[in-house]
Image (cartoon, rainbow, N blue to C red; front, top):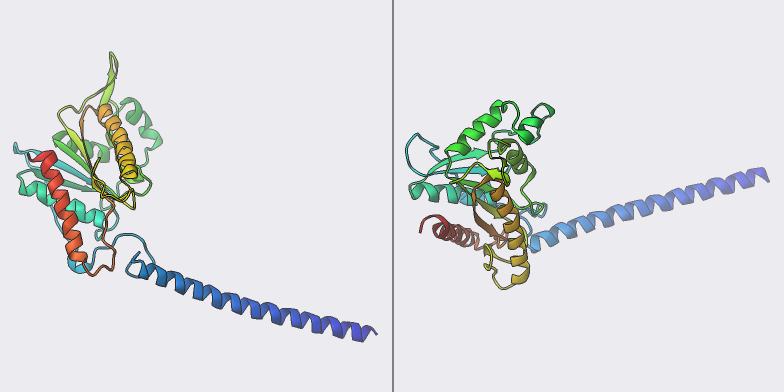
Length: 288
């Protein structure tokens, strides 16, 4: 009796293991099929070149490389570009290169500060907290160097992708560490007083879908213009507040969410259209 019971239990256990393994293999195959279908769907929707990223990718043959000449001691207007994108082949970096060349073509000196190439540390350290917050003490060497560029600049231009609708972490850290109290602002008789008067800020930003637009307020393309303007007006509130803090003029933004599909057959024409739109916007803001 005991032997029969033991035999029955062993057979039951083997059958359970066999079924579990079969189901596991089935689920594994189904999972692979789901992954393949997902990647194929991404490719079909042109989310990416390889079905694995939704980030913008400028084809190798169309990637722009541009190195501005930098600031001199001359009297020309000066534009400081603070660029924060880890990928030189992104649409956002392409816009930065387009803008830097356009400024130089129009007689403006350009200094590039690529925060990733610099390995800029955006984190305020305990020992520099009271300098950043209260202007007490002296800036660290990396902050002092950036402040010298800011002092020389007439135009301060931030270029970063829209990841969470605010300046990316490395840009925000640059702002917090470099634009410190008693350098960018101070206590005044009627509250905080900006110290960087005569300068301006501008932002160039490539984005995911924000309603459909290219430019700034009222530059929607007819998809969801109400949503587009809500985003642009929200950015304006943020930028106006920052500008007021530092005593500079907010010249607005160029925002693009009409990025070419990575595998578009018309990619060259589409990326050139964005480049031209940016240059037209810069002409209106700076060169009229």
